[in-house]
Amino acid sequence: MELGSIVEFLENRSILVTGATGFLAKIFIEKILREQPKVKKLYLLLRAADTNSAILRFNTEAIAKDLFRVLKEKNGGNLSTLVTEKVRVVAGDITCDYLGVKDSLLFDEMLEQLDVVVNLAANTNFDERYDVSLGINTVGAKNVLNFSKKCDKLKVLIHVSTAYVSGEKEGLILESPLKMGETLNGTSGLDVDFEKKLVNDTLKKLKADNCSDDFIKSSMKDLGIQRARTFGWPNTYVFTKAMGEMLLGQLKDKIAVVIIRPSIVTSTYKQPFSGWAEGVRTIDSIAVGYGKGRLTCFLGDPKTVIDAVPADMVVNAMIAAIVAHANDDQGNITVYHVGSSVSNPFELGWLQDYGHRYFSKNPWINKEGRPVIVGKIKILNSMDAFHTYLAIHYLLPLKGLQLVNMACCQYFQGIYVDLCRKIKYVMRLVELYRPYLFFKGYYDDMNLEKLRRAVRESGVERDFYFDPKIIDWDDYFMNTHIPGAVKYVFK
Image (cartoon, rainbow, N blue to C red; front, side, top):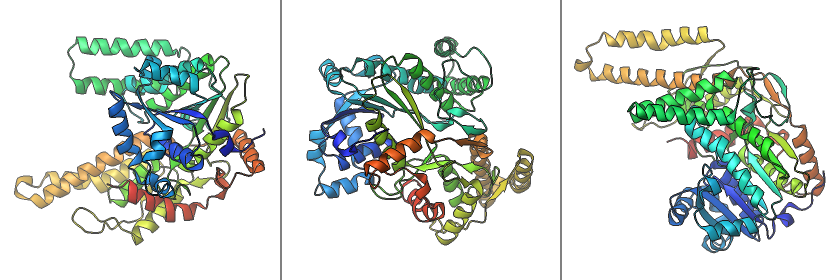
């Protein structure tokens, strides 16, 4: 694999980015504008009713964020000129035909101009409504591919998926494309068209029965989990992302497709500055709960390898992959695992130590202005042990409080409500993340190592780094990730 200058390749290129206000998408956009302000045009697809709404959303959910402060400083404190010249915000929706773009002239312009399509639009909720996840993660991937096929001079389609399309596989998991109809438990009969019909038929029946919106929402969430587990996936998110990958492999024709599968994406390692984060992600859910005193125990094997990767490394890998595969005219599909479990693994038990050390020195200040004192979180290695701990430390006190006359004692009522919240919070986290807390898989990254080698040989590694071996996890979590999560994520 040979790689020329990444910055030179990006000059005068036109790139479409879907899901343009998402976490990774914003970092990607900022990186392109900072490294190559001579890019021809960034077309940014956002879900919005019209162009003005899309522009407003982009300005408030992207440009206004602290993430863009380095780029602003580089441009004399003003981004408006650069954004006006280089960015075209597009109102659309990948769940619709033609990506929901209503402006026919703009649509034709994109077909004529685009060199690269980057699909970052996704719904990442583990237990989202099945109709919503299927529409964005599965049907949306197909719609982006169909659009890409129409582009006159497209060089490559980058589709960002997730490493966890592997479900709960054990051992070394290869960078292999998923085949249409492939399941994780050997159950036959997985058919995307049937899943779409099932969703539509179920919705029609629920509406015909005059079910409430809340009941329909709950039913669609349950359907997603049920269908995912039927074929061996633990949740709706990874199941619908897997089906999206299958459609790309089946329908790509001669389009060069690169599937990026990041593992758990964490705060930025170095660029545009260290520690930027947004939204409560997998391991941040634990950090937030622990730091705020809502989490004193958790389920998992302390020796379980947690596969994580800083967000800027994912974006750098994406950009390097664009350049590496831009001249592929054979219509190949290439998969890259972007993670750390093989190259630089760390264990769940380390998170326990990092959290305790950090929040003991830097306690969270609660609404009453008092520091939250944390103890060392208890990691329990079985459901039986977890339920026993829960019964002793939560349920028995709760039972005792029920015997107190709540109406007469506001103090005990407050304790009762707080215990109920803690139990609900812990149980939700365990339900969502249990498959990953005993995970015994390791993500092979030989394809990515070839790309890393090409980047090193091209001499641009300093700016487009994505080798997890350079990470000192202790330093990263104590001085970058947890402080970043506290600053940008804790509310």
